[in-house]
Image (tube, rainbow, N blue to C red; front, side, top):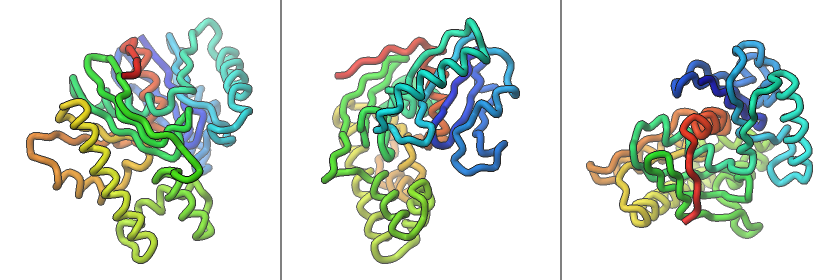
Length: 266
């Protein structure tokens, strides 16, 4: 069975899953040469007709808090249906952190894992989520929501990028450089390293699981991940998904359809 995963948000991407194996993964910007491009319809011709479609997200650059999102999602579905008539579309646009957890879990090859997801903002204002996953069942055991007084580390990196005169989408570069910076950047890095360790400790205590998966844009901080690995007992396994940013959600959504994943909250 061929499943086409589509992410129509920042880091727009497609993934073709063929009988559970990744046959193709491609980000729109690699073809259009436009950084963070979400116009994946320009690369649809590079894949064959799928048996099912998994729509991971649909921002069209408006942000997940925008009131226009339901309209744009409907428009996207209509456009996809014209391209692939009679192909069912599975909608995960309101389950952003779940798709992050999915790509982490299914590429880790753990049978049981606890996945920590941290990014700028999820579909329902989540900034942090912890999922306990076993045999294709995802249980969210903890979440933290965005608040004006507590905006999360993803937003903090975005604000720092803006403070330096960059686009908010350059938050990833700020995060990567923070580990080597001085002053405010170094302080943010230290705070993030501490927060990441606390989240992983919470994940282990809540689930008793020793297979740790990291996903979401904030997990691309290699220095923080290295220090976390060094701090963990040797019997604890740690996996960071290579496509932890939003582009990876097209893979996650496709896997959710392939494995007919069960989802519930604790």
